[in-house]
Image 1 (cartoon, one colour):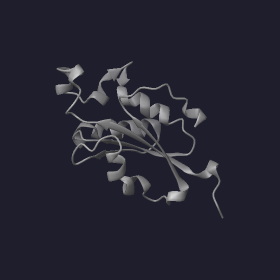
Image 2 (cartoon, helix red, strand yellow):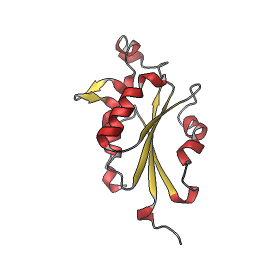
Image 3 (cartoon, helix red, strand yellow):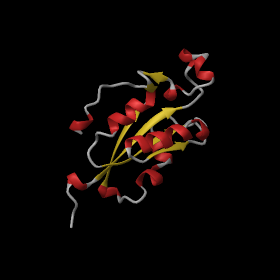
Length: 136
């Protein structure tokens, strides 16, 4: 029996980059990863994650980047509990470019989901676009 589009799970992937850039935020970016800079009372990445939470049938959110995992551990745990959606940080072994992280972690992203039953939504952290996630 084929599953309908309404039943298919969606995974969101947010590419967060890494510490080799962020020169416009220096000296602040020496101590705080750019995605965790406060914006409107929350880390910048919080706004992306809360927008993705509105995607119907959202199974989870992956953050892909090459910051050290310890820099995201507390935030990922906190946001997962607060929004009641699994969030996981995946650290690249080296900068792989925009689509490189998707390719490198494809087996983890697709885990427990056959290719035909999974949709994913990818966005870059530092490219802001007004998203109407409820229309996806």
